[in-house]
Image 1 (spheres, rainbow, N blue to C red):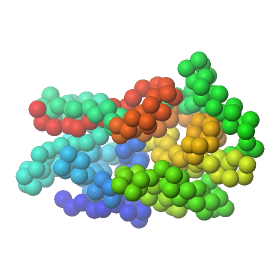
Image 2: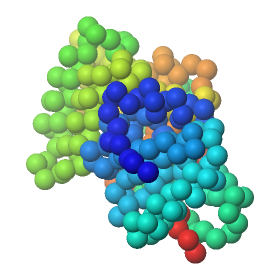
Image 3: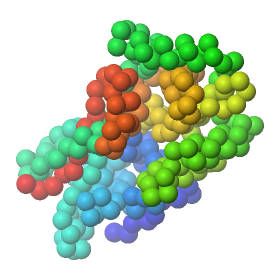
Image 4: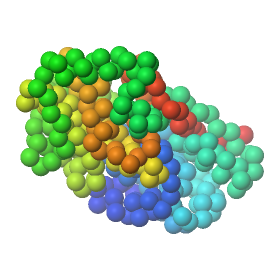
Length: 294
């Protein structure tokens, strides 16, 4: 069983298998797998017509097989690989649905440790678009201040505004990234590559302008479950009041018509990010964890 480091050239092969399956998890969008491969040391292989991704999480761990092939045989192949390599059998990104499927295939021989830091935030699209209700009153106020203070516009990411968006990202980096914050620098690198290769990755982007200048942008794509849209990246200038809630809302309004849910990914345990994501009142948390033998 050979694993390969995913590149943009592998997107077509990954999508061939991934799109035959369904999940709201952000872990199985091919753009995420490819763009983050250097940070998480992602590699993939095809087993029994399913994609399996190996990362350096928990030493070495494997994703749940995704595709329409024989998932039991695929998992058995991973188990055999682990035995040969003399490494523990660990699977990452396991949802409750995947846990139930594992129990159905193998019996109650596993335990899953769910990690709050890795849980995806799932919102109702309508809630993010309208921001109705007392609990979202503060968001509406920030947006109103933004509209009052600026001549603003929203536009779709395209070849004409692409370079300007990258320039805005580099300015954002200067304001937000300390030299020792390796993960933040990797996040900026992923954001930059997403802007450069947005068409090749099949990403949809949105741009927010205030008085002619780009002050925020977002990038995302549909999840494997067609009722859900995943927001991979959102950047805005924090010193522009209302820029973050404004790009959030406008991106949902313009690019997510017809979707029921919006996955805004995990917070990775970052306190400020968790507070911001919780303030939008998620419909539920999509829990993910590590699966091991009991």
